[in-house]
Length: 70
Image (cartoon, rainbow, N blue to C red; front, side, top):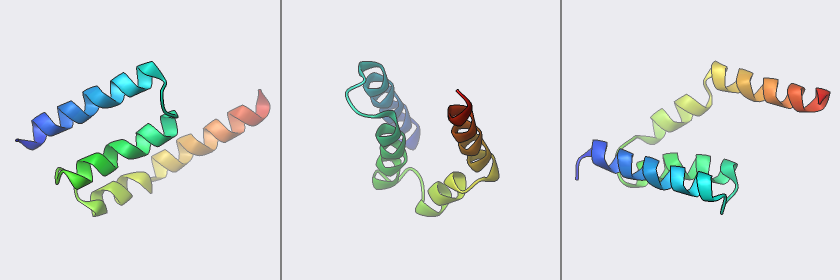
């Protein structure tokens, strides 16, 4: 199976889980990269590089500050 098809299948499953609200969103958000890693679509180095990106850290910090204010 091609990486594009695997990625689309993982995306569809993630959307279904998000909409059904059976698992916490944070858990599903970490399950998607792990599923792509275990199927060989993405490398572990790329996963960690995207998590440690400065923009991701900035958005997380903004969410924490926003939750503190409201």
